[in-house]
Image (cartoon, rainbow, N blue to C red; front, side, top):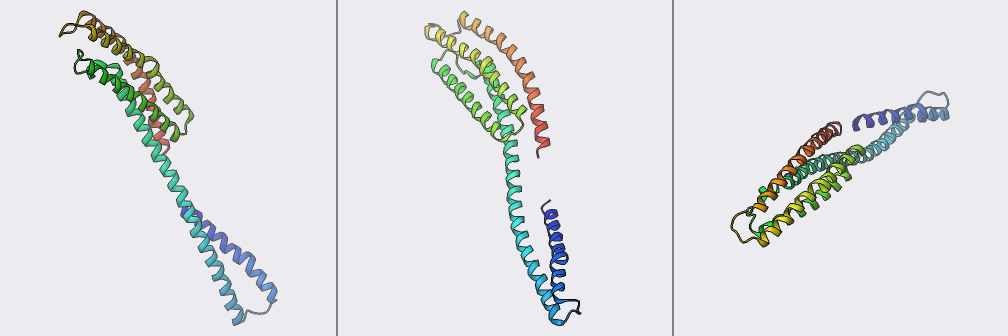
Length: 221
């Protein structure tokens, strides 16, 4: 693309020399035949013009290369932000909707607190990844879809896991047993039912979102 632009400019330059400058020169000399002096001066004129265009072409090539590299860099960052955001979405939904599988010991209050901190950190990171996504992805509809799917996790999944962890922490604090109590078992069952529904809803949203992301990357290489 850059070479085509420069070639076109080169032709324009030569056209300028032969179409404008040389006729002007000969008009001054009259209609006499070109002498040795004339040929020398014409050659100098052409070489001088050629050098000017070579210098300007190099400047233009440099600027076009910078512009091309910037565009390529932005495209690569956009692809990277799409991939990272989708990966973080998966991590967050997996942890949120299967939280009990991340808790090594449900009878350990410190373990419950540790997992709660991990959940909080992942949701904070999800917002950061979504912000980066919006920075590099130019498609407004896709940016809106990214916000919607992120907000779904914040509005629907996060309250579910927070409620579960708070109740589990309360039961663990008051429990005198080394095994899960009936309350804790019922809590897990209730969480599983609700999280399964959210899981189905999220997977549907995620599939549609990923299709749009793939199309965007294919059309913006």
